[in-house]
Structure formats: structure tokens, C-alpha cells
Length: 407
Image (cartoon, rainbow, N blue to C red; front, side, top):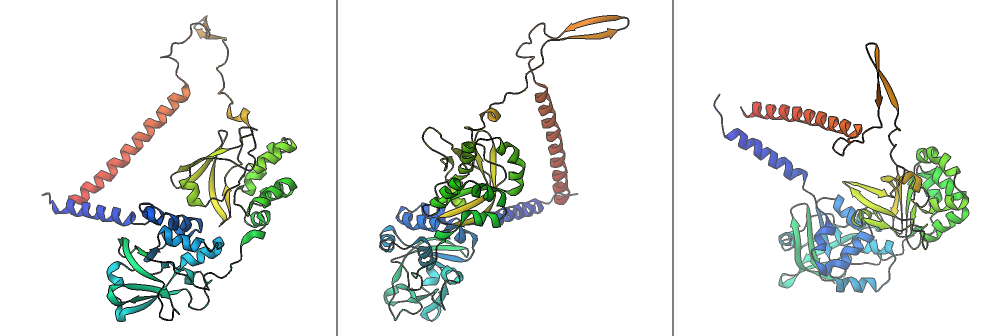
């Protein structure tokens, strides 16, 4: 059959289209990181968790403000929860590139913001009025603005039609509704929260050690991250836990808390050593946070633990489920340093050959480095070879299918 070049070309185009559609996404933190003038705005998008919400959405516009404009907002010393509402006014649930902003139908439009989407905005106070003004300017203000526009369009920062548009505006957008006091979880009971979310066993251990529970509670306001082993994990660990002294039990429980708030995004971007509530003087009680693909792992040199879910994440408190108990090397060194089983001592074996018996001495000459190969290595090599054989078979099948398709 004659080979037609158009077919492999079409296959290549389909593959390219597939790859382009599966990798199409945005990350507002990385976008703004390229522009130092927006560093403060970028920081508070992360602190208020708006960055994560922006990244999950499509068809969106972010109105960035420079550091000088952000300083005006920060001088009001608004609580984090209130600050989130104000910044939510700067995220539109629609796409507005520079061209669209200058060609608004009838010269004016209302657009919903993420503040409106939260349900916190009374009435339509979460809408922003966008108007084409004289001299080619574009103004932004609250819906009820009495003809006064708080900010104007400065420039386009990035446009990915019609996924995300990042523009710069001149001043902060705010309103009495956005700046209204918002209830905070300052009185949030950490143990109660964990007990309701599948970590009751760990919560009960904290409650059984009042000094430890008090330390957790005292750190909520200033920032706290908790790694909570699930009930099944705690149940399996209890025999070891009961063998610890009272102080060791307290240290182990405190080891599961970090005296700093960390969102999941912050944990992924801030890999490295982390001090814990148990850290004090020479007692390091630290562990390493490390990404593994999309997973976040906690490495203690005794055990590697994976974050398996989020129980609560609202600054200043975050609580995550983990799949194992964190074992500090200060308490479990023996586990970390346990050597592999040594080969058995020399002994004599007897082998029969007909009517004779040959004596074999395993201890006699010491093997050379070339001969010193662990059977486990042989097994690993066999597994690798088997895997490669299976992989080769799979590749052969896939290539055969492609060839048949092309022909």
C-alpha cells in the first residue's frame, strides 16, 4: 500500500493539539513574580488564599496594584479575613483584555467579582463598574460610586485569551461592605476540629496531655500548622506510644505541630527544614518538607510521611491529614540506624557425592569485592530486566498500532 505523508502529519497535529490542551493553565503567583512592582500584592494573594482560588478558575481578570498602592491599604491594618474581601474586589469573574476594556458596549458595564461570589457581599456590593472615560481612560469603581472612579487602567501585564487577563490599575478598589469586620477563628478549638474530621484518636491524645493541648491552642493566633495522623494510623502506633515516657509522649505530640501558618502552596514552595512545637535548645525536633510530584512529604530520617488531605486551611491555622506518625530521630534513633542483617558466621556443610562426604568451609577465603554481590541486587536486576522486557513489549504494541493507523 502506498504511504501517504498527509496521515502522519495529521497524527502529529493531533498529538500537538492534545499536548497543548492538557498543559493550558495559569499560576498567578508565578505570573506576578516576574514583576517586582507587584510583590506586595502577590504576597497577600498567597496569604489570603486568593492565589489558589484564582488558579482554579478560568475566564478571569486580576487587577494588580503596585507596592505603593498596596501600602495605602496596609496602613488601615485590616484583619486578614477583611483584607481578603478587599482583594477579592480585584478579581473579576470575566475576561477583560486591554482591547475589550477600551471597547465596552455602551461605554459602561458591571462585572461580578470574587467578593460577590463568596456570599459575604450584601446585595450587589461585590460588583465593579467599568466605564470608558474621556481621553481614552478606563475607570473602575463600586456599583454605587456617585460618578467617582477610584482607579483607572494603567497597562496590560499578561493576556491569555480567554483564560486569564492580568492588568494593572492605579489605586485600590474597596468599599464599606468589603472592609466590614469578619469573624475570625481566634476561638477555634483545634482538637474539636480534628475530632470531627477523622482525627479523633490524635485529638484524644492531645486532650489527654493538657500541657500539649494548651501549647497548640496558644499558637493558633500567631500561626499554626498541624499534621494529624488518621485514626487507623494512631491505633496501629499505640503499642509503641505506650512504651514512651511522659516527656517523650509530649515531645512526640508537639512534633506534629509547626508554629507557623503554611498553606499547601506554601509547603510546596518552601521545601527545607522545619522547626516544630517540640524544638527547644539542643533538642532540634525538626524535619524536612520535600515535594514529590504533586505530593508533599515530611522526612524525619526515621520515616517519610505523606500529606493525604486537608482538614482545615484558613490563616492563621492549617490542619493536614498524614498517612503515618512522624517519628523524630531524637526518640527513634534505633529505628533509623538499624543495620541490615549480617551474614551468618562460618559453618561447615556436608554434601554427599555417592558414598563420599565432602566438607565445605564457608568461612575460608574472603570473597573479593568483585564477587561480593548481595542476592538482593540479583533480584533487583531481575526485576529491572523483567520491567524493561514488559516496557519493550508495550512500546512494540503501541508502535504497531501507530504504524497500522498510518498505513
